[in-house]
Image (cartoon, rainbow, N blue to C red):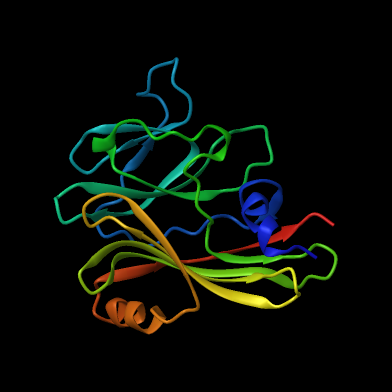
Length: 204
């Protein structure tokens, strides 16, 4: 069995997964342009709604949607892999093109993709998460994860991770799911949306 300390490394490297789902975006989905990038650049380029091209540095890049900060800066919520020919798993990335290039080498800036991670021997889940983006709390634009992860004592512990883009990208964490009902209320009002999860199974 895996424990919580191993969850991140597993989610980024070394498991099998079903094809990634695509959430309905808040703004039009761009095309994935693999030809307009410079030959020296690696990864997929996204042609954004305003016609600009952003070189993601990711492979199999997909834009799930956008989140706008209070200062007007637009953050891209993307899925992708930081390498090819390796065991890197599809991850989530949140980045504003106005901040310059997205650094992805060695899994930098990768966030866990929502869904379930199953132990390859027992088929039991050791990581379960839901993720939402948009105005995920009243007056708070960003991305939020509600997860349950296997702890070293064998119990599943609940955690919340928030990426707040109100003024800049700020990460915070707290135990429990005290904010989940507030986020679900935002969903019901059409202010944010959930990213469909995928199921992964670790190699035995």
